[in-house]
Length: 311
Ligand SMILES: Nc1ncnc2c1ncn2[C@@H]1O[C@H](COP(=O)(O)OP(=O)(O)O)[C@@H](O)[C@H]1O
Ligand SMILES: O=C(COP(=O)(O)O)[C@H](O)[C@H](O)COP(=O)(O)O
Image 1 (cartoon, rainbow, N blue to C red):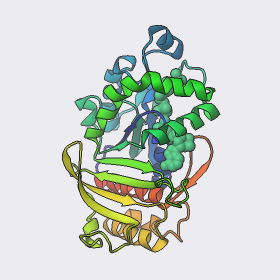
Image 2: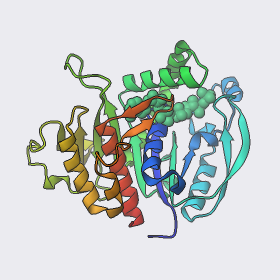
Image 3: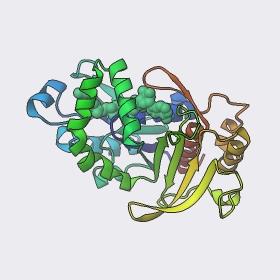
């Protein structure tokens, strides 16, 4: 494997699920092998200054994007950084922390793909794009439970930040190798709406597992719970893998075998019976999440990190 750390980027708007996905992947790779960094720490202004200036945390001018890029380059070559810390409770900055990168580094945040220099630093780039209605409910839930806001304040903040989300956050989707969208089943479908589906947009910017081996051209072999389609995303051709929350264990295991067959290290995580922890994540508000779509998303991203490391 290369001497330098393997770097995964996870970018998306606030409460899109970045920290939750980071935790799930770190769990698979082993916490001791992963350095997780949140780029909120690179905010240029504290909460009070932002309010006075009328600038949102999503604006590039409100973040030390240049220092983020500098730190990413250092991490990529295995060097330590002195990382600032933004404290979400106080809204101020704590003393910086010394970080030496482990074998795997996960960098998650709002603006991780906003410069070419940053984009060049990652081995794998993921963008999280849940439907806005789902992100809104996730944000209200988390920011009321963990960050001391009331629901009206969270909704007002979302409204105020929308122009910056549109201008600076969502365009970064174009740079991702994999775009992940968890979404609820359609209303009235009779399915449990807590059981989320996932749509994975697979760009040809990295080499994905060959799922066509076991999906027939009409995608019917595994039933309609797992589908592979050719589509376009932001105008460019992509493969789209859709996994429904009501997928059966057999269907998921077949997909997992495909992933794990190609990367030996991943094999130990592939038996759902053998490892019931896979796909089980403690969300940022303390709840336990577990689903096959989440498990497969975590495995696919881990597969790409291990392939980049040639484990
Ligand atoms: N895959 C998921 N399935 C169900 N709920 C999720 C998922 N990802 C995130 N959430 C919910 O959304 C909330 C916000 O997610 P979080 O990971 O904190 O977002 P971010 O780090 O992008 O701001 C979490 O507390 C959790 O309740
Ligand atoms: O949007 C985010 C990013 O965090 P995440 O992606 O984890 O939601 C936070 O609201 C900012 O860091 C500002 O923080 P504050 O609300 O403390 O002013």
